[in-house]
Image (cartoon, rainbow, N blue to C red; front, side, top):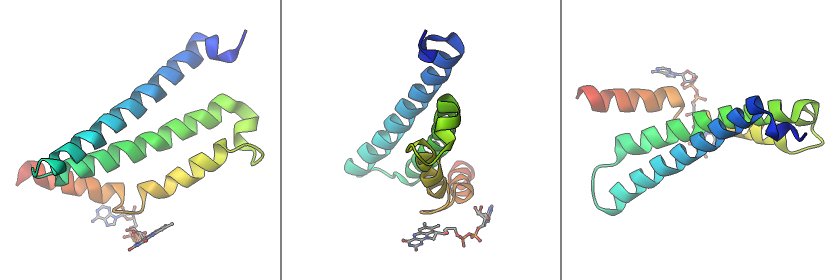
Amino acid sequence: VPIAEFQGVSFMLADMATGIEAARSTYLAAARRRDAGLPFGPQASMSKLLATDNAMKVTTDAVQLFGGYGYTTEYPVERFMREVKVMQIFEGTNQIQRMVIGRSLTR
Ligand SMILES: Cc1cc2nc3c(=O)[nH]c(=O)nc-3n(C[C@H](O)[C@H](O)[C@H](O)COP(=O)(O)OP(=O)(O)OC[C@H]3O[C@@H](n4cnc5c(N)ncnc54)[C@H](O)[C@@H]3O)c2cc1C
């Protein structure tokens, strides 16, 4: 039986796909606000925060799913996880994104 057919694994895959779809929808919503000439700062911050935190979770889970092969440098999965980490740091760390979002709520 392929491991993807085990319920525990398919739940992980479902959560990963759902997170990716949520991140995509959120950044598109921010982009639509910008195109419409509406304020989009907090939405852009939410989008960066959600997409990068989710990408960290998804790539970490992907390493887990691939087991030992996921951890070795022979396959690209560990590289995806390492490369995503910096996205939580640059272009405004995710703590700073939370500050921007928090301020927009209490202003
Ligand atoms: C690969 C890479 C490429 C980069 N490319 C560019 C680039 O092209 N152009 C550019 O200008 N910069 C670039 N940077 C810099 C990047 O934007 C900074 O690393 C980032 O802004 C974080 O700043 P810092 O490293 O000084 O961390 P610090 O500001 O020292 O922060 C350290 C930690 O403390 C947290 N922290 C800091 N202040 C607060 C606060 N008030 N409240 C809560 N937490 C806080 C941060 O979130 C972080 O977790 C790049 C960085 C990397 C790693």
